[in-house]
Image (cartoon, rainbow, N blue to C red; front, side):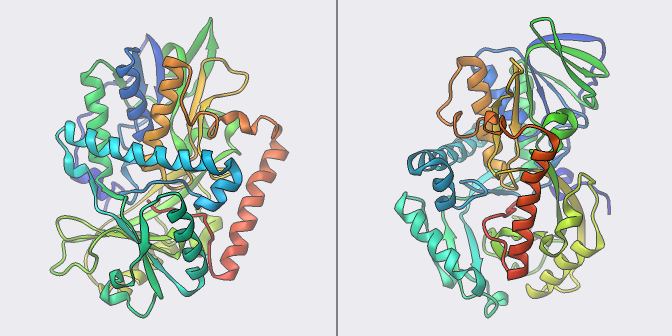
Length: 428
């Protein structure tokens, strides 16, 4: 089996040229994933000239390698988000993700790929150790109008007895991630964006009143958006301990005669996630809870310990021994406070970043791409203050930034020892 994801294999892509020589543009977007493609589309709506540069190809990274869940909200439960931002800003941020998913559904239909973003709802299968958290999450959601409710009847038959209840999250969607991102990137190119592939960025440096992005050739731009999530630190070393890479692993079965899953589901606070496909497969991901330290890496490879966990879960679904056609990994970016960074980089006029989605980037990536595009074109966006990278301005110096990451890791390990993971989750 190759290292491509099921989604990438199912939606081939026509390669674009590599960058050579000097190219001048208004905005250079680094990364042709969901954030980069969304940012480019929005900039074009504003009438702004844009060039996208990617080290591989559109949706080659995590945007084409994730679990295919399009979930609203952030990596934090609403009550914790409200503690961080305040009740009203937290509510507004959640509603912004709902609006972003609505826009994705409408845009996929407009671009002729309605199945690429399909509203299905999702189910959280709740274990005994998660019950208190689930009850609190449902209460908090009801208080702000988020559509979720207990639905124990939705536990699939093979998993009955392993979970105490289920929570139905009606607003969520199933995604064909490579098809969605590649369609949006191609549509942006058709509308006037320039897309260069196979052009790894080696430097982003001030140049006159703007910036020079070196990637074989050079892109000379008034503004730059670094939109490569888990690989942000490789482009911007000053952020490598604020947004750091975490590996997620997946597998996909061959089409099955019987489908045990009615719709996308997750459990273990999102550390396990699984969904059906329209051709009868089960796509399954996660499995890193018992191997956390090894999965803090940018190595895009599958490993036996995590894949063994995924295989064991297939057994729980009654699918032990079924053919597995794909096994793959993707690199996501976790931020030090589990909220995305989206906006201008402090003390670097014209340089912007969008990433650090902490495992729930399919909708947040679209939102943050639009956010940064709006900031560049108009100077404002309603969620700009909540997600501003400047919130890390006081955390200067490598030693202090490492402490941020260490605290998060220590808290995560502590939750693992208790048998739960708290709100730190990866739902694809």
